Length: 131
Image 1 (cartoon, one colour):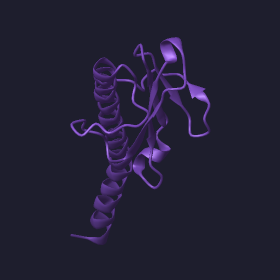
Image 2 (cartoon, rainbow, N blue to C red):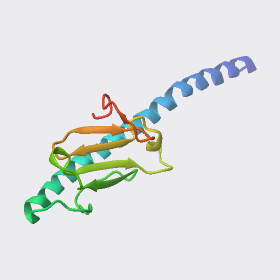
Image 3 (cartoon, rainbow, N blue to C red):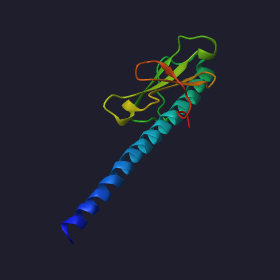
Image 4 (cartoon, rainbow, N blue to C red):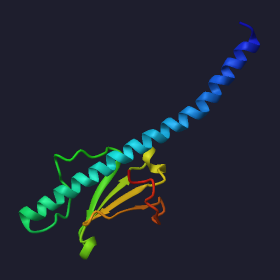
């Protein structure tokens, strides 16, 4: 093999890597976001079960059987009224791949209305965020 052929092969591999790595990373971010969404739905069922059993929504999340994403912090806010009597939130942990996810914070309320907040806290469109 000549030096020129070797350089061409390295160039082709570099070009393919430049396309494949960001695509793969994006796939991993979407998959983890899907796990966080699944966790929010599991928590929503658990919260409603707690209300049925105890007559009140829990102030803290302690669902042992819920399979929650390791890259998100899950929380509940029970200070609202009406449709927002509670809000479940999944916020990406810092220093994880999810921290730079365009959908960032996932929120679901008592009537399964979903929303997203950007890293700065602004509400953003849920299009393409909730699978």
